[in-house]
Image (tube, rainbow, N blue to C red; front, side):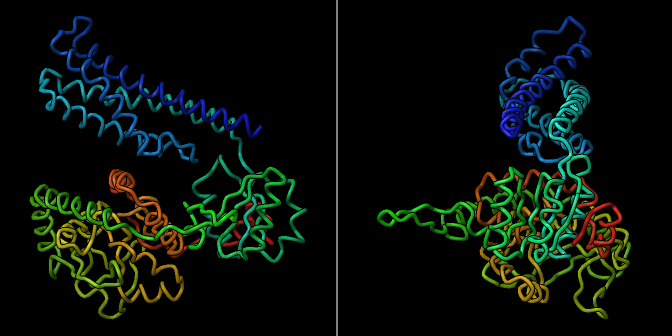
Length: 462
């Protein structure tokens, strides 16, 4: 069965890719028919024929960047939303290509009509793909192993974001694994192991799962991430695993800095009119300075002054001291709420990037007050400072403001360990999707699911 599923998903990915690209071209063809009928002028259709390789190649890259070829458990709404962003960018890039090849006869109305047709066709096609994949995949029955806090956190994510893909059947605390395993073993297909579990017990669980042909998912500790992509070495006939250096090489830093300078200069030139409008809105609607200057921590533990448009009332932390923003935070102004949702409050950080305090991509910088707290709670937190802080990063495009600190640290360490310019480009493009997703910009949530809620849902928690 497992071999069948692997073969199925490999073949289905090829089939889905081919149909996707065909529908992109069909959308353009139908747009021409709607615009001109069956008597399409040669000078208008010729640019489209020349640009077919660019359309196909760009479409494939954009669909890959936005995760449309991943078999990750996505909702239909997320798929349609991702399609919309990818197709909008495709129209813009194709339009830009017409200027590069100096084919100005490509009608601009075609792009608008094609966008609507392609979105409709691909949404219908992806709905059929989703139904087939769910039918083949089935609803996997999950056993969560971890302490109560991790059971609650993982359980919440599965209940909120994996409906129809996973169903939690049981949850065990590590001390109860040996004596309770046989009670639930035949009822589950997938084992989710939380981090913080003793390594010997973790090895035992993985060994049991492999022997029983059950799928295993691990929530990684910092050590697990540090051991990713190891270097295999031989000392005589003894195999050794060497850890690669954790951080960026000097060459990578130099290239990254060069791109930061270019992008920040371009960004400041393009965004300057918008920044002036935002500054005026803040000044007119609330008392206080336009910019909010705050001390943050970057590479090597060095502190710097971070610039943001002010989104809270004046002296918001005068009485409370440093506290994290919460969902529906009463200190946030009306204009500030809009700026936070759209992430426009981050625009002044382009100056930080130009100065060299930050990079476009990297772990988000935190205040020294919270850095000390997080390092005491999570010793691996300090590894985030092996690279410059960033305006956006992997933890921001994958997670939310409300994402647990431990999970954000794991994502930041993964980014540093697997750094590449292609990864930076992908994060930069996905940031556009995040900016358009309101829930990603919400504050820290105070409410979380409890083990009692899991038990009320029929989950055996022991």
